[in-house]
Image (cartoon, rainbow, N blue to C red; front, side, top):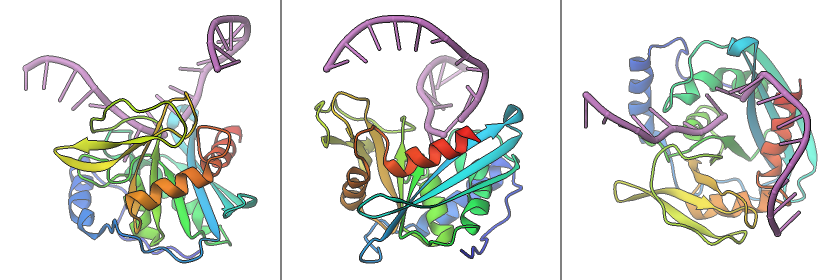
Length: 221
DNA sequence: GCGACAG
DNA sequence: ATCTTGTCGC
């Protein structure tokens, strides 16, 4: 797929913060999805040589049957350090390389990391969604910000994730008695709809099939 | 100033 | 993220 860059990637942390403060107002948290959803993609990262090389993997699955349709892998030098709150500036360049090679344009992308559940409401899922103009969901394995109450241990239960009186996402149990995931809107999707798709992409494991497969590609080779 | 801190 | 074997629990 074709991708039009929106800004440079060799940035200082201050410049990155300004970009977040600017682009955050373009994020849409209402449902603007193509109907029906035919393809769902998962994105994941891996690193080599002490983190100096970034590896991005994309897995496109058919929906709702979740059959593997296409995969893509890209490598490039890492140019931005890992700083909590600025993950997208480290990972997105390689992700765009991998997405450019994809033939099957996904209707929805599940990202590894937060959506608006972010200090400036602009996590990696929002950033990627804006750049490629495809609906995205933030699916994180751990907490960045926010507070929440304990949730039931059965699959499907969830509680709101709150920051400064605002609901920024949910903590969702995708598998009974297993550590929950942190879900938030990325771009062009509402929270209830995001929860629905995450559950529909999750079968017998904690992680959605999309990210599980991308995960394998990114870490195996 | 002191902790917390996606991957 | 990554370095790494066996082991505990459902």
